[in-house]
Every structure is written in C-alpha cells, then in structure tokens.
Image 1 (cartoon, rainbow, N blue to C red):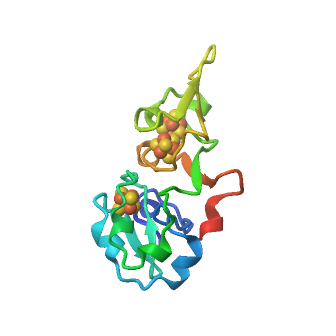
Image 2 (cartoon, rainbow, N blue to C red):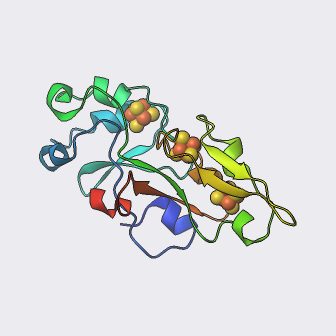
Image 3 (spheres, protein in one colour):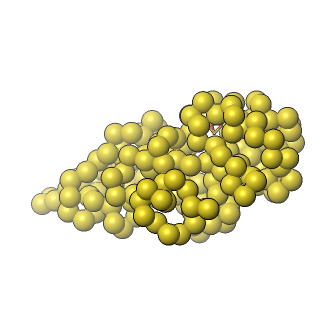
Length: 163
Ligand code: SF4
Ligand code: SF4
Ligand code: SF4
C-alpha cells in the first residue's frame, strides 16, 4: 500500500520502511504486531505496514521521546539502548535551491542545525547535510515543497536496505 505521502504527492513507487529509532532490524521480522508503538507515539508517525511498524515523516519528524520503546512489551529484546536511526537525510537533485530557486525551508525546520547552505555568487545558496550532525529525525522532509529530501543509510546505499 502506498503511504499517505506518496498518494498526496502523486508518487506511484512504494516507499521504503523506516523502523522506530533503536529497533533492531531482524526483530521486526518477529514483531508480535501488538500496535503498542503505534498507539503511544505522540507524533503519530508510526503505523503498521504489512504488519510491521513503519515511520512516515511526511508531516512530522521523530523527537526521540522513546515512547515506542518504553511501551513495547519486548523492548528489552527488540530495541537497542540508543535510540538512533541508521540513516541520514539526503538532498536530491530536484531541490529548488539546486535549480536556481531560492529556498531554505529544510534548514529552518532542522532541530539539529544539520543543514548548511553554501554561499554562491549569482544564485541561491546550495544545501548540504552535515552527516555527523544529522540524526535522521525526518523533520526536514515534510517541509520541503518539492519532496526533494530522502534518507540514505549512513555511509552506504539507499535506505531500501531497510525494507
Ligand atoms: S521515539 Fe517517540 S516520536 Fe519517535 S517514533 Fe518513537 S514514539 Fe514516535
Ligand atoms: S533528518 Fe532531522 S537532523 Fe537530519 S537534516 Fe533532516 S531535520 Fe535535520
Ligand atoms: S526545502 Fe527542499 S527544495 Fe528547499 S532547499 Fe531544502 S531540499 Fe531544497
């Protein structure tokens, strides 16, 4: 099933699964589908996708509150101690600023100040994501007017590896 984001933006491609922060990936395969994480996420960004939890950053990012882990009946086995994501944000080539249109919306909504704009003579400044500072929270994604922010596995290929 396509995500709400994909439907709203007219995309036909299934988006990759993003697991709650700290959730150990193989554990998703034995998740009991109890929905505790879905029901307790204050940002309402978790849903069950093919029976397994999946985050949607279309409208909200994750603030690492830990409610998903704290309410999971198997948290001691399923979650790592650190609530981290294995991905970071990535600006795609159809970003407005990269195509001559002034925009810094992503930077304005990044709680980690991880999006830096490089000054450029004669045109809009270009965005760069500081990989060491990006937490992968996804807060920038829903604020990009052209859906030009994706996520990529840290120092690896595209996040499809999480699907
Ligand atoms: S850490 Fe909090 S905001 Fe993030 S997915 Fe879990 S419950 Fe939602
Ligand atoms: S994913 Fe979060 S930390 Fe990373 S650039 Fe986007 S808003 Fe900033
Ligand atoms: S919000 Fe989107 S279009 Fe605007 S600068 Fe950031 S990535 Fe580019």
